[in-house]
Length: 432
Image (cartoon, rainbow, N blue to C red; front, side):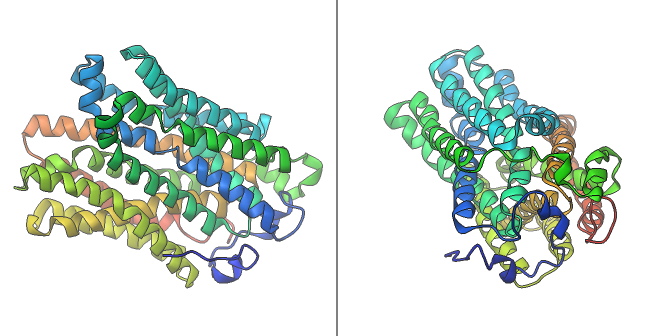
């Protein structure tokens, strides 16, 4: 599908039922519209960043047995390598807003790309458990920073195109992670696991160049003098995000979705094998789950462009997760591809929608950064419990029925949270 949107008219194409209020853009851009050159420079930098933000994690999962044999690791080591990223995502989300505010968004993200690239290289050159562990910690922490700071960059630099740029950002993450997870094992057989994992550092170098160019051309945003803010914006800047009901609703909404996503990503093949599928068939379900993301993101963008309310999109995507879980747990495994596809669609839409709402429901880029950091800190801590909790329940019962029922209950609760979190109100409760 070709996306042929003009940056000057994109806000006309998207009938945003919950538009960014004028005050949100007034302090961050000199004019109401984003110049074409600035728009494309920002988009290129963001997409190159996105290409590095999920692929280093999923690439390891594709060749975990190879790395385990090469480094003489046990199952506990591999378990920690799978769990550490979520903890680092939460830590990065917690501390990045204050660092981004102090040093500026572009300055901070240049450092983030450098650390991320260094982590990718370290895992492949320091051939030991400690090298792989430290490299994974570094790249995961950098991704946690990027997860949080991309939303305020989008709000600051492309305020009229939040939905489009957020969609492209999420789409790039999904497509690149799908491509790399599919080719990394064949590459391992051709050039060895070190090059198969470390060679993707070239994407990090490309992203670094793009962000340096962006910084030179535009300066570092997010360091807006108080004198340039309106009285209302000064009040908003001093308000604690942690006291906002909407912020907590968004955090829980994203957290329950993340718990579902990471649990399913870890155990979906095992679940389908227990339902009677062969190992090959079950493995293909994991690929289907991942590759639903591009379809979901493009579909969501199209629906919002056609004027569908964000609240309907949020509730509908959560119901897709419910249907998918019911199908996996209780309906025919002959339709495994259908239940897996439905759940994959729901998960991808919710993630993209949350990133979008961090910008749409706040007044200033700094406030968007705070909301993004707070919500993602909570979300990834909740997600961390998912795989461990599901694994523990399975060990206690020797069946996936208990874990699936528990996740289904949480997902039903998330339907209500989706309705609350996507209401057309701002972070302070005022109408959007």
